[in-house]
Image (cartoon, rainbow, N blue to C red; front, top):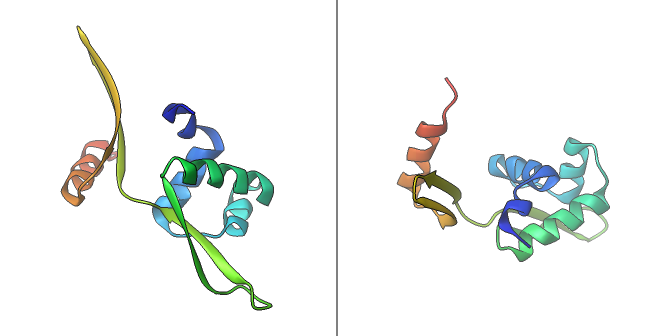
Amino acid sequence: MELETLLTGSKWEIIELLAKESLSPIEIAKRLKTTIANVSMQLRLLQTAGLVKKEKTGSAGAGKPRTLFSLSDNYGFIIVFSKKFAKKKLLKLKKEQTEQLKRWLRED
């Protein structure tokens, strides 16, 4: 699957939520007003691509462990195009790179 397709629609909405906090599929489904089945499918695709990870935590009730999803790391998907050069690439970002991109992308 092309990376661009992973960064659109409901998958992008999930990434935006997980950028703020770790969430369960149920919590994501409630916030996006969609089904748990849809969220689970999108999370599976994002996990296969290495963009999100899951972690089993304490009990969610009846002895069943709760599963939380979070971003697997800090990434930047960079698209650059100018005369005689065009490139797109997924980059793993260091903390200072993430902070610099936040400043560049800040909405005033």
